[in-house]
Amino acid sequence: MRLSSLRQIFLLILLLMSSIASAADNYIWIEGEAATSKTVQPHNWYSNAIKKKQLSEGGWISNFTDKADGVASYSLSVQAAGEYTLWVRANVIGAALSFQIDDGKAFEIDTSKPVDVINIANDGKPDLRIIGWLNGGNIPLKAGKTSITFTMHSANNHHGGIDSSMEYGTIHVISLDDQSLSKSSKILIQAFSEEKMYGFRDENGTIKDVGRAPINVRDIHGTVTFSNATGLHVTTLNPNGYETDNAATIKNGTVTLPRTAMYTIVTR
Image (tube, rainbow, N blue to C red; front, side):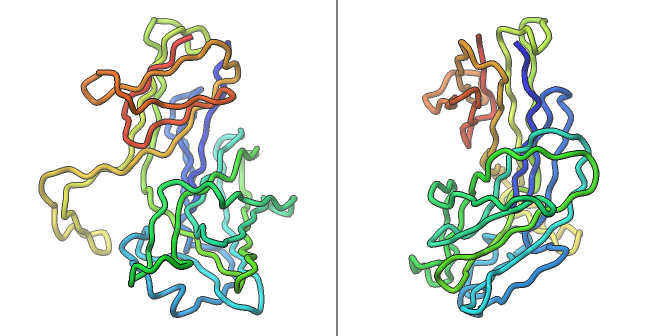
């Protein structure tokens, strides 16, 4: 059985998880507010009356106007050609968001099934100021320079917002029976995210407070796809190596890693 190459784009914008074939840390990461070109109209209530500490780098790119769609384009430098999974951290309430690669066909992103949803409204009201992670599906990308463009086109004032919250992420896939990954019957998946001491703080690249215990670790966002899923079984382990009830899920050959799990065992 051949294990397919996995690279994930976590957008919000883009974080690309590691390639399983090479176990290298290949990822693409672009902050939502770092668009190379944009046509958006922020609104003081929708765009600024928010909990900015909940957003990566303290900001997002947003649009709220009855006049036109919001459009934001980003340049990408793709190191390795392959199929990527797009994840977007964006507004999820009544939102309509689409994307296109270069001048290609536009694809709608399903905003009805977000994960890690949070209310970022300053006053905590359950209105439009709610964001979450959205799965934009798999995207084939060629190596080299390319671009991705997002269009915010909801019926309610064309509203929409894009951010990113994971600064780091990687997945290691290891054979446990001395076989190659393509032949291994027992595989360990290790997922890592960002960790910081509680209270850690930096300003403009200078550490102001190293923090203190406990260590805070961001939730995992990742999937691993097998080209042949016949007979796959997954078991999730806690940091001490014991099986947990927080099991990974598998569907159509794709293992979705639990948000809080560091280790997952795949057998076949």
